[in-house]
Length: 208
Image 1 (cartoon, rainbow, N blue to C red):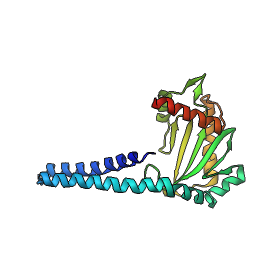
Image 2: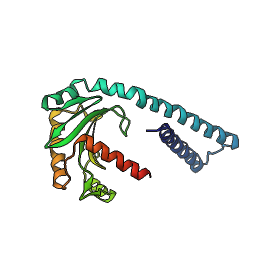
Image 3: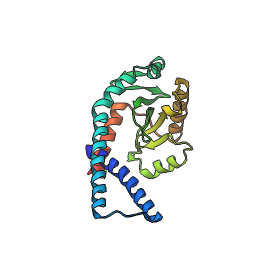
Image 4: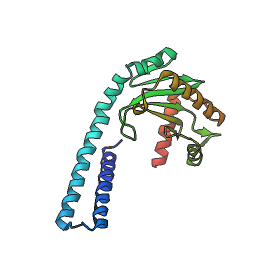
């Protein structure tokens, strides 16, 4: 992710907080901020956004990869080696019901917490056509929890540590269930190198 995206996220976060505070003071009739005060608030938001955005970018870019390598050497992950998974750089890769599965560590998910993540890969092309967002959104609406996400070419599952340590048996059970779900939808198996190439080509076409 480019560093500007980190700044945008931080800016959005602090802007929402500031706007909420301002609206609250206006509603309660306690608003007394002048032009100078507004300017100083704006400057504070920008400075905080740059500072926090830089911290998260640095962590994701330089600290995160090393931390992932360290984490997959812990029992939570090495247990998967016993059922056929192999270590590849900072993630594990294996097969469940013939589908390629990637397992890794995420130091900060969308809620800001640590998590174990799994990705079941599938061919995002149906009869030579790219799988469109209509189907992905439709499938996503049918999911009854907040931890499974249909994305282009993969079914992503997040296992937050805040919900308890992910157990090998539970993760394998979910992967078995999800691979069968993918199969029922007629989505074909695909090897990681081919999948990566297809995703990169798709992203390149979308940007152009």
